[in-house]
Length: 313
Image (cartoon, rainbow, N blue to C red; front, side):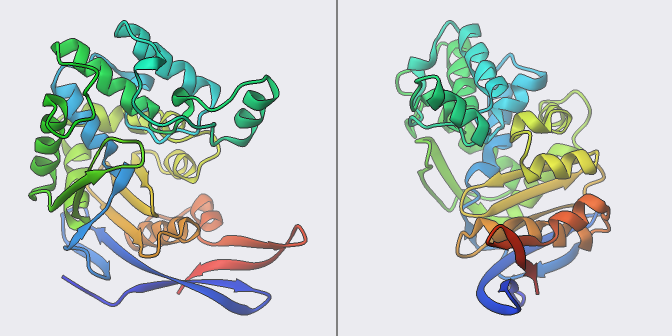
């Protein structure tokens, strides 16, 4: 399945200085295609957009989290204090501490939080890494099941086999290829069409099911799945019932409670183009509002003043 690509222009002082090419898939509540740009049925790399599916496999395997902490298990968090406290709470509940985490050391992405860590004499730590919530939940799932925690990131570990099976079930596809994500966890290559199918399955599931628990807790706590200043949280606050999950290299997946859903991929990985294209996809499905108007274009600065924009063409 292929259609004409979408382009995002970076305009400075009236001059188009850069262009990003984007793929987009937007699906109506009844599952019909509303808008397609680029190749959406070939293998792609959703990266952290897969975290809700990874968390689903954990819940099915007995992960005893709910509310904010289950949202954190799905998160690419910003390392704000409440995120860090939540990761430590998940670990403590499993009888572990942050030394068990297998993700890389990092500093908080959230600027004020990062500055506070450095000002207080702190340094990079695994608990600050944006995937530490997922890793803590993986470890907690291993403890519940009596699985080894030292090898929880191995492709052949029972946890990772369960996650792969869940990804294939919800996307309706065999994983085209596997790899290693930036956090060290296994990575799955599936199509944008498959990811959209999976997100629809989460929001349309019966209340109380593991699928619906993931969707409901994710949407109820948008700051826990991203951060207090992130555009994904802003979109979810502006559109109650919307679920949006970012992935590295400029991937987005979203679904609304009536089944409207979609995916976005910026082909060169340019994150600055991602949000305007996601807003275009949401608008194609009938969503509007002041928050979407504000996020539809990115502002370019010159000398601290607006001198251009990032816009979808």
